[in-house]
Length: 269
Image (spheres, helix red, strand yellow):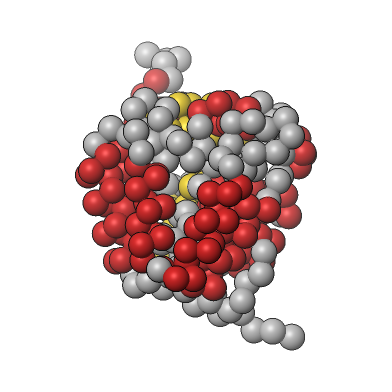
């Protein structure tokens, strides 16, 4: 019997439940520009992944352990939004506990981050291996290089990079072991075949200029789900919610919310 400390979560807003999971090396604070546009419509639970932000690292080995840790601390049924690595966590949770995930939003995320047979648009695995090697020698420089790649090609790239850097440091540095585990997940995970078994609605939200998850990979991802749809955020790189928070919030609301009441014609009027 092993006692797991709960992950750090923060809840804000009212409405249907929405779980938000950040990406590699970052933390839940990264959502602060997006949250004000979601909190009037949803009860948002923001999670810090194991060893990131305020969540302690307890040797969570592998993607199922990450997903289990998040499942342990979020509402029983919710829409799950995962950015980048967070998208894999959300996808894994939907596979493990489909009754808990009412809908799935993959933000700049795919079921296979690296190139494989029949999956030509993703990144080369060498890139992640390089990061893994550099992590051991120069932790901060590696994280900063990864952030720079995320904004590559994005509109407002300088401002987005500033927000990413500030967000990374806001809750203290992530645990090196957690970063290694995350890179391993990004390099080794291939959930493409499993996507066919996801019966809930799935939205792939892609950055038009994302170099880590090119929009061709996002398009291919949307096609893997029985109820998949795609929305491309114009001008955005790997962090669309920072480059174009209004567009991303609108896409989330449109996907998750029933038709606005004022759009329904009053039959008696």
